[in-house]
Image (tube, rainbow, N blue to C red):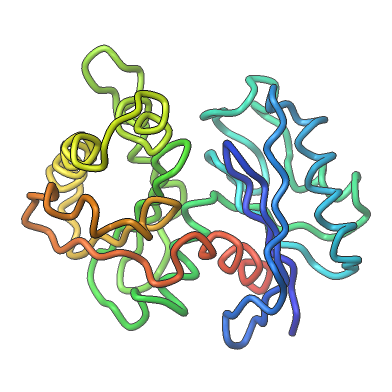
Length: 244
């Protein structure tokens, strides 16, 4: 079955067609920059453009960069405050006329990684961290998703949430080298290890492809590995979420 997966990020909204049996992308990825401000009207327009680009008429899976419960946005994260309380699924269905399944973006990336990537067959408590505009996290116990596990929201020093200091966007904004940023990211991982004691941490998102650049700064005891699907995991996981 061919499904459309859309990964909504703070800097870009990306979509592709996915084979639900193999978990492979079967089209080129189509990316449109995330509009500023990140309002419901502006972002749904972009998502509709991606649907139109693929001339797609089936079910759509969408990974969204904040807490989603039963299709409803429960926190705004890096989005415009007007998203709070919005039923994202119904809004997108009204905009496109298609059936949408919307889940947290890190949950989507984790779902792909646990079913088709480096997490496949891994037992115990596995945490997937997606590195991008924020720090998303997806948690899996013996392969089963624990939804909306937002570890990037932990307050840190003068920051309302640690992702403002340690996400990939902080590296870009402050012009940090991977080694300097890697120290910050390791601090975040130290909190993850202390609070939830995972058996394995898998890194996804844009920075995961450059893991060799900063892995020397990762000092925690928990095993940390990059996701083989890297930046495509969000699209693949979102697409397959329509089946569950």
